[in-house]
Length: 301
Image (tube, rainbow, N blue to C red; front, side, top):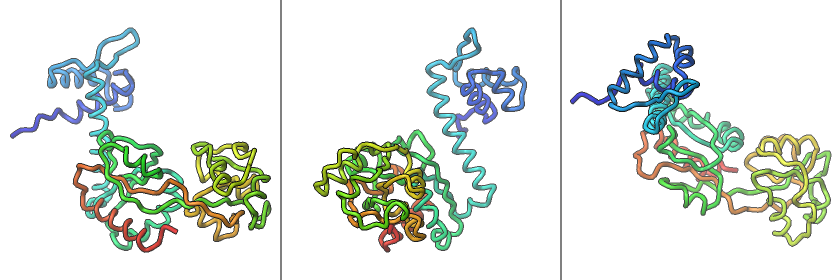
């Protein structure tokens, strides 16, 4: 039975025109004439039996049906391009994993350990893009996600199943020039504090867990990423609360020291999240098994 699929040329023209809301700009991007793009879209509308664009004073705009179709086509073309590039690069032998991950965890923890994956599965390639919030897998090309959050947040991520990898141990760190370490929580409350903007009450909760009154627990410069906090702390700008696993290198090299020997295991943990309904390809299954074994062997610390 012949598949009901339009030509990839017409889909590429439609996707570009929809993204730019302009036949002319789509033609420039694709190296075609404006009339050629127009003909391809007319052919696609004829194939579908409905209009995708409407004329405006400034060019064209998507119809409601066109906007919905564009989202589907853009995702499909992106996945087709990714699969094609993988095959061209020779990665098709072992398969590829499209992974979403929180940025600092990906760069500081996962990527230094990917050579271990290559030793076990040399033909598998892992593509990583950053995502900091839950998303719908059906709207993306991701196979899995590495996510940091609470058990409640993970439980309410629709259409997914999750594997808990390890808990998040938070430690206060600073430059050895600022303090040699071994401070008490009360002494720490009088030092300059660096804040993480997505966890604005981190210091307050840390001091409260030790029964310490810290009037300035919410004060200090705010940074979005833990990697930014690590750099600021390394340069003596203050004390930062950072998950230990994200600063392994700085602690080992003496660039950062644990300012107070009282780590705190918070409510957050690290999870591997996958679509609940979809059957994972062999490459994804192999990656997940490797990650599970890695964490079980204690490589999380």
